[in-house]
Image (cartoon, rainbow, N blue to C red; front, side, top):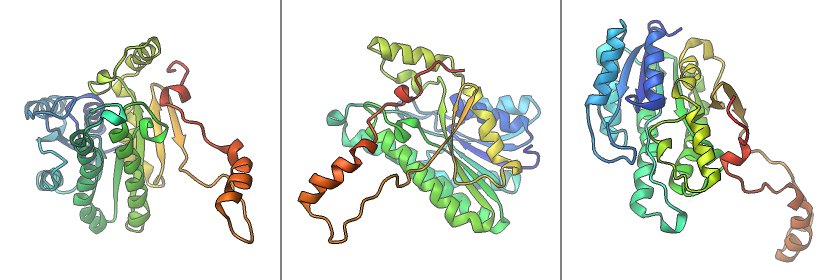
Length: 301
């Protein structure tokens, strides 16, 4: 389904990114395998993991090129697109997957850890998307697949940086879909559930947290790859501005926030009338705070 396409996958050396890169290659795409080679906390760099995936693709008869740039650097992000165009002649799809975790309860989260996560998960996704935008516009086609998270869509403890970035990704993806739809460009999000090096760093101290980790271990990264590959293909030409989630063999479609209640006062609102009238009327529709694990409380299917 991807024959003749050129797909760039960030964070493609391990976990979900690796599975997406391998599947896209098996489906006929030439793949730019980008990975900075850092640790699960975003430290250090190593070119060899991306090169290993390229060798695996080539050994199976596919085409790929390795790129070890950091997407947090605009020039590095641009080099990913340039490698695809210079090596394979075009770029057709971007899979924004790269990332790492630096979790901390909010009052202990450092500014450095906030910036590091935002720089990759949000700024980096913008840099890569922006670098491909003109190519997509000129050829009248293109697909962005942006990885978000239920930590942002729903919530989780100790992930203010990651949650904020991943909700930002939803806004970015939706804006791209609106702005570039006229050029035949589409943009969608995937919130994955999968055991990987990144999710392995989630703390598991209580019995509930340990149970959650065991659930994660049953959800392999290869289960996420088919949806990502589909969204890169021409078969998804009518799918844009959507938020999907993959959990083992389950695929979910999320909604975007929309108004659910309204109340009008012809004379306008005061502080007192908000307290006495508005809040009592709307309180039954308030959304309770929840974590992702509370919403997806059943075992993966």
